[in-house]
Image (cartoon, rainbow, N blue to C red; front, side, top):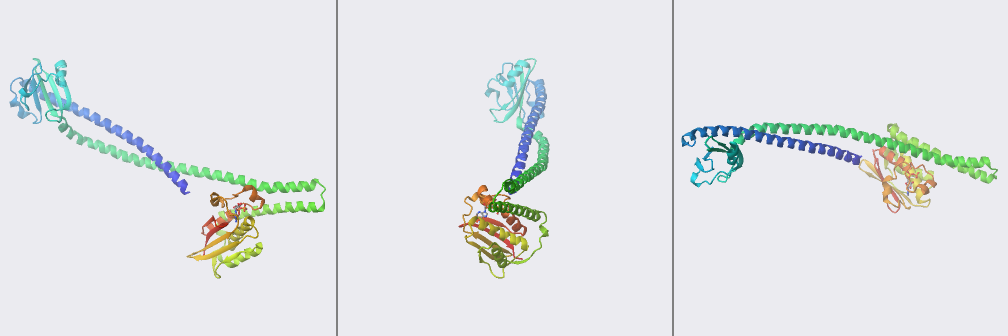
Length: 414
Ligand code: ADP
């Protein structure tokens, strides 16, 4: 179950993660695109402003234009040059210090087409500037420039709102994806659970058919032999006995299946009482006619259904005799442990040769060695009943190898 839950969670996480990645890529693309668009728009707006300044300057040029300066933004740089690119006026730097400007991209463009613009880092101030140049009718080129960043910043503020909007949308989308992912993941989880249950049911039906077929086939075989052959009295009795034993296996199987289904479907139908454990184990030993060594305090009792508690010890003892042999040593110890009683039930038989089987012993119809153990009879449901009965009482059971097979389980003391 824990494993399933983990699998389900990782599935949901994968789903959400892929959605998030797609959405994040999309959002980033939108933001970048919008930034680029805004940048272009800003540059366009700035060029328009520079155009106006340049037109005003051109009205004055090549006359001294210092008187015009107070009307212009202080950060505006103005350069006037002749048709050959020789600087005649500059409001920031002495023209004598400036080289020929004909090869500046915006000037080159203006000389060719009439107007030109360029964004680049100014070699004198190290700041990005937007340059705009225009050629007048007489060949004079007026160039104006502004720090690009200074003008862009106010625009960016307005655009932050757009950015916030996108982030909000992103968060909203994230929540939506998470929500849808959970719904979807849950639906998938449920579908998987249903499919697993269907498979288990199919397997169980197959198992039951298989378990019934075995004794029925052999009973039929024995009866056919008896009907079709004239056998001596001794042989006849032998076959009848064998057929009879198989019918006993069959009724044991059917009784076990009935008990299991009652434990599962109506667990409340088992009346509980105080069951002294020492007496219970002694009764099992007597019924089976085996010796069981006990180490159980006299007054120790479990609170449970007597028949089910009997089944637990009876099945474990049956198995010990079956798999460890009649002469095997069987030990049962029980101690009070808080509200519970802890029981150790062990034999000194061969145990389970591979630990990987230990956890599966309690599964229905699970046999460690299919062929060999089936010969010993047994429905294959014994340990499954034991585990279900322990769990019905709120206890827990485990099997381990300890010089034989040992079961450790708990039962309620109150
Ligand atoms: P079965 O009817 O086959 O005994 P159980 O559910 O009682 O079915 O036991 C499941 C399997 O566990 C058995 O087939 C056997 O292989 C193994 N097993 C159970 N008890 C013992 C034991 N005391 N020693 C060794 N193997 C055991």
